Image (cartoon, rainbow over all chains, first blue to last red; front, side, top):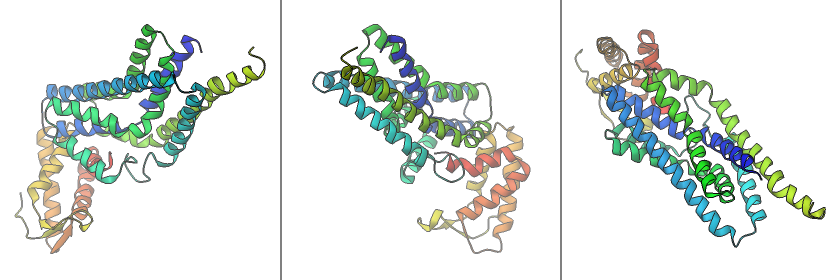
Length: 241
Length: 96
């Protein structure tokens, strides 16, 4: 796999990560409560900025951790088997996203167990300090680990095959693309847009987002299967050409 | 704000204990919804007052109401005077 191809796969995986909505939902709630409680605009920007920073830190930490583990384990494991596992995960999670990601009710309610959703919602409402907002951002990434693990794993596996300089570029690319919805929502809120309009847009387009996320996972899984599993096997069978 | 009627509110799904109806809580939640959509403060106060008056009037003939009833009646009235705020008020539990 050439370098451009590797970075393109990382960007697509990050785009799939970006289509998962838990962090965006929490940022919307946090901003809504902050404006509703008549806190200053500077406080609103501080809290939403700290939340986004928390998401950034946790995303980069997760990606680096999985990449490190993959690098250690790939010395002893068969890499074709690793890619097959990653593809299986992508296909399975793609189907799960199509079936489970949003609940079939009004609003943008997610797959989360209701007790956990209520807890996160209450914590978001109670957040007043930037340190709390940072922690909330960190926990929002962790809460969505079930779904974001597949794109993170694929990116981590790709990163292990790159040079150190390109690894840094890959991590930066992943972080930037996966955070793009949060950056967009932050900019909209900071520039005075109404939360209700943002939330209404999210609700009207949730089926499309769900389809894109699930379809992206399946398509990425198919591409990686052909590129990393099928092609080397066929080449080996044809005598290594 | 109109006089507070003596009625019990059955909390969400009946799983939590009932509590006395407190119009100030309703006022605060409607006000927060209006402020969240960046309404001017006077307009938000006026909308919250209006919703409280309608809900208190609706409660007068009922000895016991559910929190969902209160939310529905408040949202219906708020929808007539401030649709953007009503949308947030109705959906704030449906974001996550």
